[in-house]
Image (cartoon, rainbow, N blue to C red):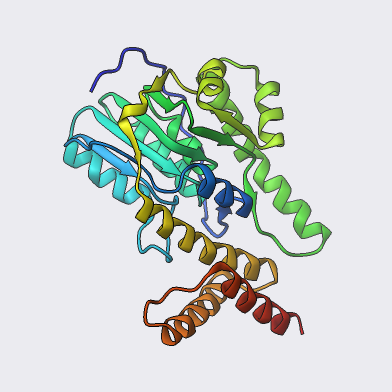
Length: 286
């Protein structure tokens, strides 16, 4: 692995003293990831490579997910320079921060290769690299910390104030990496900014373009990514309707179980899934 040019690793990011709040990736970002990142993989994987081709945080829909605990164990096993192959829509931003902190503490060079998309929490992970490469058709996306909250105006005002230090810390990391002024980064976060490969390099988020011959698309994985994204979308809709995260997952599992019982292949198209979700939401709201 070569690192022709590097950037100083930014400072550590703060984590909540109590992890009672999950900072999510907005649902629309998962849809855009399906368009640009689903199924994108690397052509080759070496002994010093950690692959991050999943959502950030434990993912009940895939049985996987990128976590700080897993990454820390992989870094210990490698024990030297490491290459991170990254293609993720994001997920739990606080888990992304924890992974970023683990990577930046690694005593050996860290090269990060954005294969498809590094959005939301995954863009934070990318900032831990000493050298960052990104595909010409890949994207990096940054935005403010995003949560789902319910309550009256006082509770929501408290939630907004609670989030401000994390947005400020992310602004500092992106500014340190890029050399852009803090107010410019703040505007980019407010706007939910998508950066193509060449723009990410121009703005200082990445060091170089990743050669196209290092990237491939696995159509079987792309199809599975789309199926899982439908389940994630149903979960988010149910949470928005007022269910807890656990209850939402139980309801989606119930729909999925009925689907599997009705089909030998376990397949169901998006229209049928959306119809089931609409019926369930109507029942909840009634």
